[in-house]
Image (cartoon, rainbow, N blue to C red; front, side, top):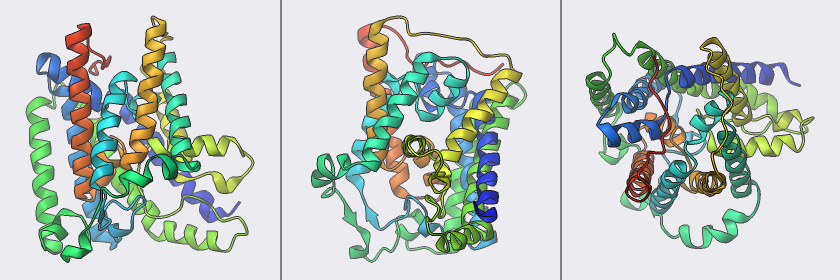
Amino acid sequence: MDPVITRYLFWILALSIAFGAAAQFSRFCLLGGLGSYRQSRDGRRLAVYLAAIGVAILATTLVQSVTGIDLDNTRPAYRSPDFAWGRYLIGGFVFGIGMVLARGCPVRSLVKVTQGNLQALLAVIVMALAAYAMTRTNLYATAFLPWVGALSTNLTSFGIAHQDLASLLDGGREMYWILALAISALLLFASWRWLPLRANWLGWLGALTIGIVVGLAFWVTGGSLGQAAADAAEMMNNPQQGLGLQSFTFSAPMGDVVYFLQRPATFAAITFGVVAVAGLLLGSLISTLIRREFRLSFPRSWQEWTRTIIGALMVGIGSVLAMGCTVGHGLSGISTLALGSFISLAAIMAGAWIALRVEHEFFGRASHGCTLPE
């Protein structure tokens, strides 16, 4: 157990705990926001999510500028010139439908587990197993790669080195800052209109915390500590897995948890993702207990169990296919201004919006099941 890697993982744990607590007390949930807006044009829940994106863009841009970290080399490679538009669109759309059926994305499902929701526990288990199958077995290589691999464009053939918006516009550092500030200002302004600070301070505190944590994760993993951890891993007989420049995502990491649980004595299997999931659960549980919001709840019928399993499978498969989720692309990816992350998030929202509408038309009910913070 190398002390540098241990310190690195403790930093990730601390950030994850903050993320989990903020996600719980702010009711951070894209699906809840879309559902509330569709039902009653109430944009407050959606504003929390959009504000977190705006803050994450500012925080990540500041980290990149101050530290000189190269965000072209993230895990996953958000800015890769290999523009996998098929994966972004198809995976994102499948994910969006799935999170409606499962009544939550990975983050919201993990938070609901700490609040005593057994339906969410089933969803998390199925999501984790699906992500594990997609990342740790040959399922993706045999069932998806042969056809989805062709739905990609290499931007270098057009003289474009990376897919961040500044590179696409043939701009430099100044252009990057202009775009980051403009997009952040737009998101924060829209959020401010929907979410007045005085009556919704918990929502703003959660968005601010989550956005800053996303930027700090890039600083920890790509800064001096992250580099020292990578150097230490190179000297090991069994190198630490999952190192490299990265920030938060929760779908594929749940597959990492399944992998780790098969070999719990292997320190090298404790990845960023494993710690992120554990920290989020811990932070959310602490917030849940402080706010006295733990209530055991069960699915009402076998149809709910079936629906949850199908939706969770779609979430696990779709997230890996899209290379991100509502946090991986929605926050971490977009904070690097990667075009693919914007497209993937749009596909997720489109899939969820259509599924919400179909459900309302055929069953006359909403599925977001989330309430605003007091």
